Amino acid sequence: MVNQIKRRIKAASWEAMDWTKSNSQIAAETGKAYDTVAKRRVALGKSGMALQRSPRKDLKQLIARLQTPEMREKSKANQPLATQAAKASPKAGRGIDNVHAEDWHLLSPTGDSYKVRNLYEFVRANAHLFPPADVVWKRQGGARGTGGEYCNATAGILNIKGGKAKSWKGWRMV
Image 1: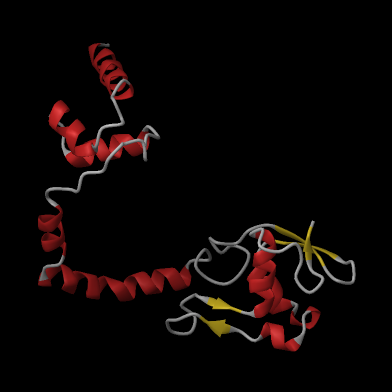
Image 2: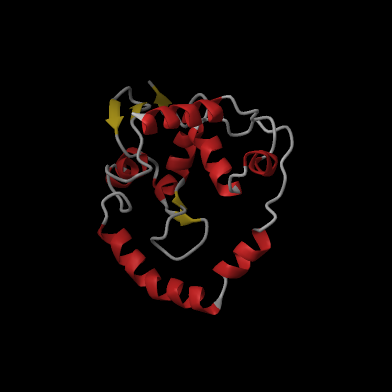
């Protein structure tokens, strides 16, 4: 019972905090760590309210600690494991389960309606619906299969959803 009351008082004091101050100012006033204040700011939805930002005083030490030869070796050792896990995950691969997949309702130039979960997968599977020159896949950088792939069809339809265009070669959003 006493612990619950203490938690409520602590929560109320975080709610009443003047979030227009920078994290380092609040940390100095409350005696809390900079990271604690930053974490509370995000948790309470008060991000971006500070009138001025102050740089972290321990940033150089943090970077130096993370960029030691030992940490670089650990990163090199873990990278193949991360790549293997990403390849096995349906959220990272091509398909409707991709983490970036969105719902689309498209109207073709012929008047056919398509409800699509992943635009890129739709264009790959239905290349016959687009001019051949518009389904040539290109890369923005990186190795093949690492993302950044696009074609004129996906870029044009993305412009419709982004509000840059009302239609692309007769394709429209419904």
